[in-house]
Every structure is written in structure tokens, then in C-alpha cells.
Length: 147
Length: 147
Image 1 (cartoon, chains in turn yellow, cyan):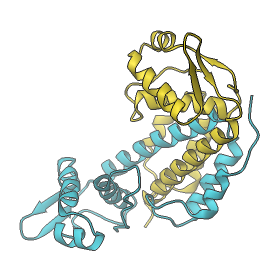
Image 2 (cartoon, chains in turn orange, blue):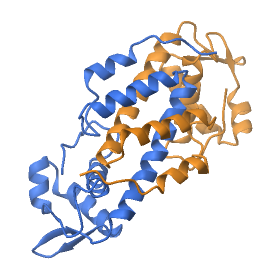
Image 3 (tube, chains in turn yellow, orange):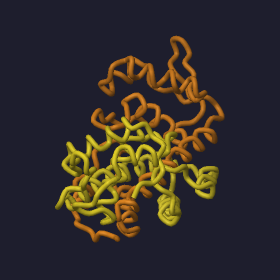
Image 4 (cartoon, each protein chain N blue to C red):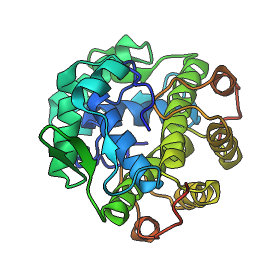
């Protein structure tokens, strides 16, 4: 489930962990009763401070997605899938709307936005990785300014 | 040029102002030598603290997009359009890639992302406004979890 954290992303590392768990539940890669790595395991694996992982796990517990059992690890709660899916969908929808409206305001044609989305979806880059260079090259295009 | 600032957005108010100026230059709505409202005018019009506007203008001056002439107001620098366009495109592309990869990780099918983008582009909502309710309703769809 866990992809590498990108420390240069504008998204904080602990939020990247939280999101990865939520996305995995929303997409069915993780289900109720599944066990997550312990704080120690995950911080080792991802080369992160244990407090960063602890913060993410604590937030996920407060949201009701995770429960920690002393000496046994952390488990996804049963029945959280629909809630998780809705949280993810809402958050993604709001961000998509924001960035598409930004693109529109900046004069980018709809067709170009479509192409960037399609390439992003097709590339198997994980969310917080730098965009692949082929994608970045699309930023250089001069494009036609829209009055 | 200036749309209302949304104080509930995750994007800070002064950044919203900076972005709006950059988008307007990138799209050709503002050009070199165009005059922006004074700090006082803009803070009144947008119902913002004058320091918030001052911070945005200062950043835009540092980036080389704006220059303030004492007693005359603030002016867009000549020849900044290509630079501005590239800054905007790169920023938008990175964010689009991020949120599309998030959507993919959360199991949203490509078709749905396309639809959300199309509705967002078609709605004339300004970037930092709340998404229109028709769009938000799309978050409730159950969707099919992808294994």
C-alpha cells in the first residue's frame, strides 16, 4: 500500500501517509480488519521519523478509520469503506475543481487540461512523486493566450 | 481582474491575490504597463486587511511581475507575459498531476475524472470559490471500488 513519501511535495509527510491509507481503503486495496505496519516498521521502511508516522496514525484513529491494539499493531476498522470513499471523493473533487478553474483563469484551453489529465492518469506515478519529465515538458508549450 | 477571495479556501488569501494577477497576465487579461488598483483600493474592494494585499504585491514585485511607483500605483512589468505563463502552467500542471494521481489511487475511473474536469471548466466558478452544488453531488456517487 505505502508508496514513497516525497519530502519536497507541498503536502506534509504525515498527510501523505494519511491520504495513502484513505486512498487504499477507498479503492479496496485495504479493507476492514486489515493490519497496517507498526509505527516502527513503517518509519523504518519509509525512512521517516517515528513521530511523523505516529501523527498520521493518530489522525486516522480520530477519524475512525484505524484502531491501534496494544502489542498487535494497527487495524483498519470494519465498515469504513463507504465513509472513506466519500471523504476521498469530496476532497479530490474540490481540488480538481480548484485547479481546473485556475487553469481556465490562466487561459489554458480545455483540450490541454484533458491531455494533461490523461497523461497523468496513464503514468503510474504515485501522487506525491515529481511529475515525469514528459509531462513537465508540456508546461513549456507557449499556448495561445485567450483574451 | 480580481475575483472575490474565499477565506475558507486552503489557499491563503494573499496567494489567491498573487495567483489571480498571474493568471490574468498569463491569459492576456492584463498586459505590461497595465495599472493595478492601489493597496487601499483593492483592500476596500475585496474587504481584506491592507497588509494582506501589501504582502501579495510585495511578492509580485520580488518575482518581477509588478512594480510600484510611489503615488502612481502598481504596474505590470513589460514583457513578463511568457515568464508568467510558464510559471502558471508549471504550477497548474504539477497540481493537476498530483490530484489526478490521487484520484487514481483512490480508485476513481478515468472517465469520472474527465467528467469532473469538464463540469468544472464549464462552470464559470472562480478558482477559490466553493464548488457548485451540482458538482459536489458527484462526490456522493458510490462508484465501483477497483481492486
